[in-house]
Length: 87
Length: 426
Image (cartoon, rainbow over all chains, first blue to last red; front, side, top):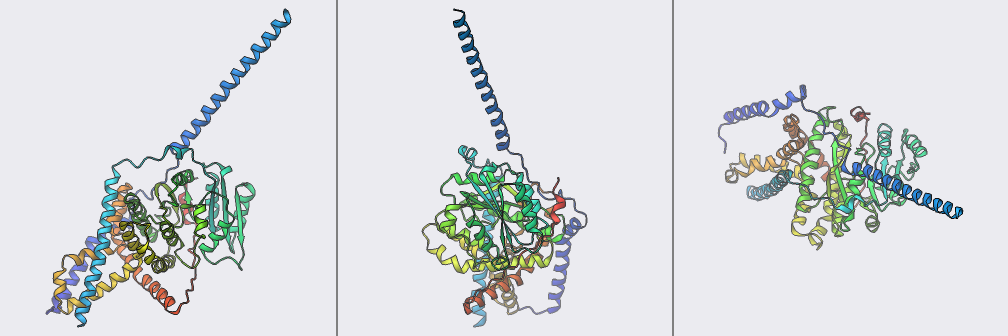
C-alpha cells in the first residue's frame, strides 16, 4: 500500500515532465521544422519494361532479317527466270 | 475475493500482451534479417504470364480523386487488350460518373457501372459484388479511387498467380499526402509498420498475409466459388482473407508492388475509418475464430497468427482494462504487481502504437531509409489512446447486435479531399 500520497503525486509529476521532455520534444521539433525527405517515392521503371522494349527491338530485327531473306530469294528467282528467257 | 479474481484476470491480460510482444519482436527481427538477403526469385515464366485482368474501382463521390487514378490506369504498361477496367459509380451525387464516362468514351477498356440510389450506396462489398458480376478477367484486381499505383503494378501482382495455390495477392500501400498534417504523418507511420514490417514478415514466415481490400487481387474462379464479398461484414477484406486461407489457398505479399493512397486528413474521418475497421474485424473474429481453430488447412503457427490477427482490435480494450485493474492492484497493495514488475511495463509498451508498436514502426522507417520521420513515433501514443474509445464503441455495438440478433451495418465512407494531387509530379 502506498502510504505517502504527497510523494506519489511528486513522482507522477516528475515522471510526466521527464516523459514530455525525452519522449515528445524530438517529435515536436520535427513537426515544427520537418527535415525528413517526405513520403517514400514509388518507382515505376522496372526490368520488365526494359525487357519488354528490348523484346520489341529483337522482334523488329528478326522481321527485318526475314524480309531481306525473302527479297533475296525473290531476286534470285527473277534472275533465274531471266536466264531461262535468254536460253 | 475480488482482488484474487482481478489478479487472475490481470495475469491473463499480461499474458495476452506478452503474446503480442513476442509476435511483434519475431516480425521485426525477421524483416531486419531478411533485409540484407536477396528476395525470392520471381518465376521465369512470370515474365510471360499475362492473364486477362479486370480492375474494379468502387467510387462513391470521388470526383476529386477519380480522374487522377483513371489517368494513371491509362498509363499502365499491362497490355490493354488483356485489361478490363470497371468503375463502379456507386450512387454518387457529384461529378464522379461524368469524369468516369469521359474516360470510358476515350478508352475502350474502361467501363462504367452506374448504381443508382435504390441499389447503390450500400457499402464497398455490395459495389464490388456488382462490379465482379460484370468482370471477365481471370484475375480481379481492386483499387480504391484515391489510390495511385505504379505503372507496372499489374504485372507485379498478377505474376504471383502463376502458382495455382495462390488465391489472392497483396501489394504495398504508401501514404501520398504524408506531409499534409499531423494526422497524415501518423497514419503514414502506422502504414509503414503494417506494410513494411508486419505484412513482409508474415509473408516470409508463411503466416496469414492480410488482404487489405485494395492494391491487390484475386483469382476470379476462386472468388466465384467463395460467392464474392460478404456484404454483412464491414471488414470485407479481412473476411475474404480468412475465407481464402480456409479454402486452402495462400496470399503472397509483393512489397515491390507499391501504390500511393490518400490518407485521412482529419480526426473525424480517422475515427470513422477506424471504427469501421474495428467493428469489421470484431465481426470477423466471431465469424472465423472457430473455423480457424478447427480447420485442417492451416498449420499451428498459421492458426496462432490468424487468431492474433482476428483479435487485434480487442487489444486497445484489453490494454485499458489491464491499466485500470493494474492501478487498482497497486492501490490495494497486491503482491502480484511486485511479482510481475518486469512484465507489466514491457507488455504495456508492446501494446501501444496502434497495433504496430514503436520499435516495429522504427525498424520499418529505417528499412525505408527515412532520416527524421522516426522522431514522430512517440506521438503514436495519442492515436493509441484515441483508438481505445473507438474500439470500445465497436465492441459494444457488435456485442449488442449479437445479443439482439440484429446486425445492422452502416457504411460510413471515407471522404477524400484530393489533397494528395499536389504531391504527384506531372
